[in-house]
Amino acid sequence: MAGFVVKLHVLFTVDRNIVIPPFSAKVSKLILHRISRLYSRLSRSDKVLKPVSVSPLFKDGRALMKLRNDEGMIMLEGGTSYYFSCGMIAADDFLLDDLLSFESGCVDGVFGASAILKEMRVEVRRFDSFGFPKPGAVKLRFNSPTLIQLPTFGRFRKGRYIFFPIPSLIVGSLAELWNSSCGIEHIIKSPSYLAVYSNYALMEADYSVKPVTVIYDDQRLVRGIMGWVLYDLRKCRNTKSLKRIMALLDYAQYVGVGKSRAAGFGQVSVNPIY
Image (tube, rainbow, N blue to C red; front, side, top):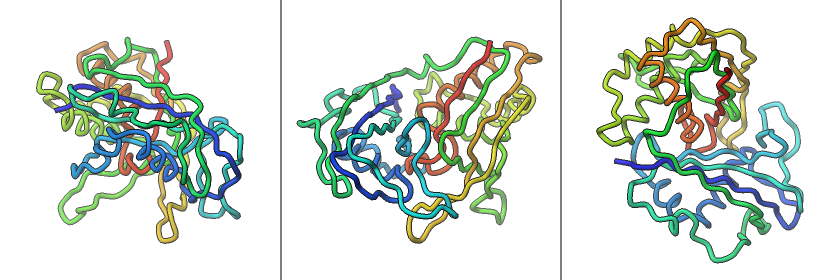
């Protein structure tokens, strides 16, 4: 079982203008393979719920990706700063030398350019550190397309995607990932109850959410949601279940939400409002 959740933030430039794939998380993953043995090892995991979560590239707060109806290609400009992040669920004995394992601040062979690493920041969290004091509301922002599925049922083996952030689907999937990774002392014993309870605890007060279709590669289009939703918690008691939900939402900022987190989808940020 894991002991830590690690998040690596990387700021870099490239030494020349280059064209990159239509979904820029492929650039993030290429750089990560070159600078982190821990990422390389965890990304090869055969677990259904991957212990890594990677973001697309961001510039000025906007994820770099090509939507279905966009024209042209995505380019990185030489000398311009870009950033991405990666969350990793690591064992107690993970080594910092494995987290950052490179000899030079220049990564060659990045789609025809060299990436110059300008700044790196590391966050390390234990499972018992996640959560917020009870806020009056929580704003959940979907920073990259988020793929939320209904649970599999009968002949619906692949579930189906939902284009609205229903609390039980978000909390339920986070609880499943949490339980697959944490130590026995932190196991959520009734994840299905917690998922149902979240529908009553998190009351939608406002939202701006829309489905987007992104081009992942030459063969695949991926459809998910982006935007934000504001959940009102003022009528909810400060129960153990609510504290669990706050811990899971905090956890989501490190591990992502929904399907294909390791490919750049489901990146979220959470803002508790007091």
